[in-house]
View 1 (cartoon, rainbow, N blue to C red):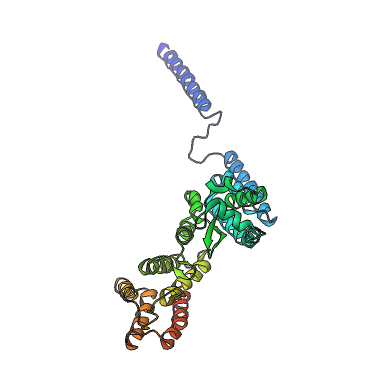
View 2: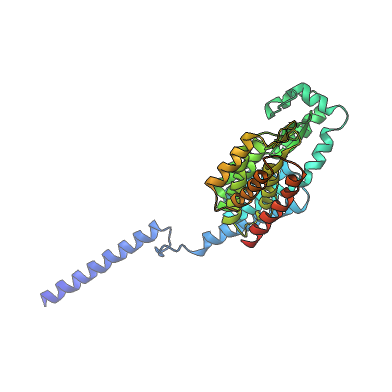
Length: 321
């Protein structure tokens, strides 16, 4: 009988130990005995609800025609709290707001003698946010402050200052965004920080322009149905025409002889040799052949081909979508 009593005592002690361990685990889990990887929906629902409220607040701002600086402030405070898809919606909404208000800000900057005051504060060639305090007119200072807070910058062109979207500042958001919109920002930031054309004159090298052409083509191949494919297609078309004919103050040929510049032809051939399997390489190769058949002379028979080749390139890009 003693051995039976011993077994009974052992079982009682074992049950007490199991009960104590169970209580400790419950305390460690905050009173929740579910220790699996899937947490209870309470915290998840709270996050989802918060994100939903954030996006409702954002859509209310954009539908209410709030200015870019107000939208940017909201994004800065909330973009880290939402999904990548919703972060992308925020960035697209900010860009649309900037485009919408761009003309209004241009009108503001050209009122009265405001351009003179801007040049006085910052000089005729560049103006950055550090120079805002030097502006004497309080109303103008407020306008320019709102412009910079709205993620624009002032760019000089033809003796005046204009607001343009500062895509370099979008890069602060890149870690929250899907790859497609990040690569779009990279493309646009190249143009906003170093414009390809200024005052009808090429602002970068012919090789750099060719690289931008290829970069936009690669984007369109990679993100065929991307939310920004239409805008990148437009930019690709601009780069292509620019590359094939230059600008009024930087044509591809010598005005006196009518012959194509050596550096331009060299750039064309480099692009074709290194990128023969691209749409851009094929189009530029056709252009080279036409120019060579015309004994390197750029006349109306050659310039007439620019739009034709442009349309061919765009059609091929559309086929690939």
